[in-house]
Image (cartoon, rainbow, N blue to C red; front, side, top):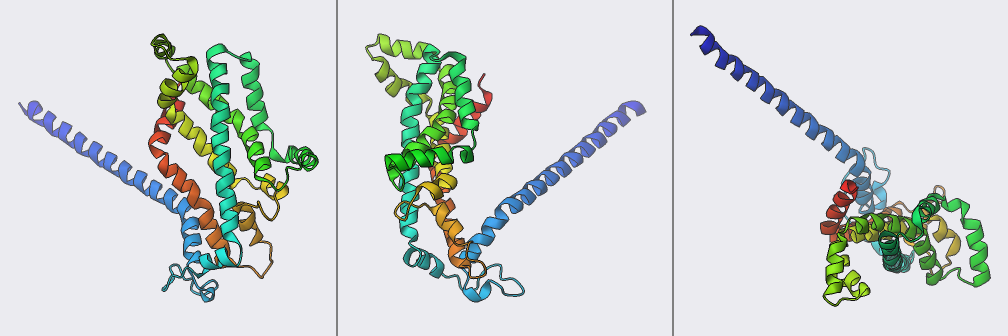
Length: 293
């Protein structure tokens, strides 16, 4: 009888210890996530607050973490004195056109590889090899070619270049989604009277939309953040936000800290906006891309 009474007590003590260890594990996990959040978002928070400070707060001691009277004066100066509106518009136009062009070109290419094994395994490997080439290895021949063709300082030259650069990754990613797509659904649509092109546009594309969202986000952010091609191949009329951001750090001690911080904030907002608009498809695309095969 004593053993029968003691056994539930032992089980209860073990359950309490297990719950205690699990609770401690949860606390440590959340603390670790909080530390990572502060580590990664702390610098951006500092940049945002700096863009809202007055000039007298930049070197204040003790440091002014949050300005008492936030001001948008640096943003106004960025658009009026530093031509920020033109740089921002250039980046927005070039990134948007490059994103659309990458999708339009990579989708039929990936479809041909996935459905008809076009190019065999050699083409897929070649695409990955091209994607691994560093930009610095391409900039000199591209610059010489663009000077001969008159494509420097033009939207067309930059959009064409970024499209070519980002197509290999886009094709490689979309091939995986298309190979996982049940071909029976596409064949059923063609039996019902759809042409292959119509079946691709009306049946396949809506289903692989998460994968296309990943490609679109990658192309937009990569184009927006690109610096080397932008600074070499652009002129006054076509320079981008990344070129503007770096221009504030080349003045030695005479730096415009407020405008530099404002340009950084404006430089990351479009990427956040595109990610927010595509988040519904983005999560599905990353999940499918991580589990396929």
